[in-house]
Image (cartoon, rainbow, N blue to C red; front, top):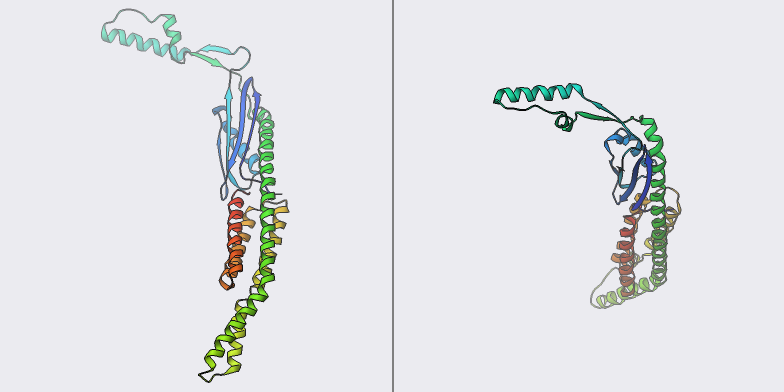
Length: 292
């Protein structure tokens, strides 16, 4: 079943008392390209996060964003950085002596200086953090995948309607081909008969040329191949494996057959059908660009 390359999934969870939001989104891309944005405390898990996503996505530009909000629940240990505080005091004394200043650095001012007071939080191991993050990531990916599959089903319905319309148009062309070939033969014979009134000619050779020229106007083989491509297109759409690249290649073959029919078919009705086929193939191509 087809899957769209456009998707979005979002989940909120708790890690060490903090609210964590995991978002996975993707847009069209020729290949798989992943970018991730994680808080500093979760940065060591970036490779694991991308590996999990890569197991479920084969094409698309995928963005993974993890944000963390809130404070850790419960009191945290606070300590004084005595070495830094002593350095501040030494610098204050040097400044006072160098510039003949008065006054001392009081305790309140000292405690307000940067990094004198250090909050010590219990550090979680990478395994502990991953045990909390992995389920949230999995749930976000499940929503992301569901959205891609839902859009893929809608794309599949639209594509198969257009493929059926192409089949019907090819049937109309094939029904009309014998009459076109007969008309070409008759026009050539009439024209050559006029020429033969005033000149000697090799009738056998001219009859052969007529047959060859008429055969060039016969697009039966192209119609058969185009119908076969339509059948293969339907098989790819129903396949469980990603089909975007295969469908794109198949469309190139279909476009080539349509162009050949247009160049060989010397008839107004066939020209109208070819114009319709080109429009449908182009619409399908636009849709296929969004398929994984």
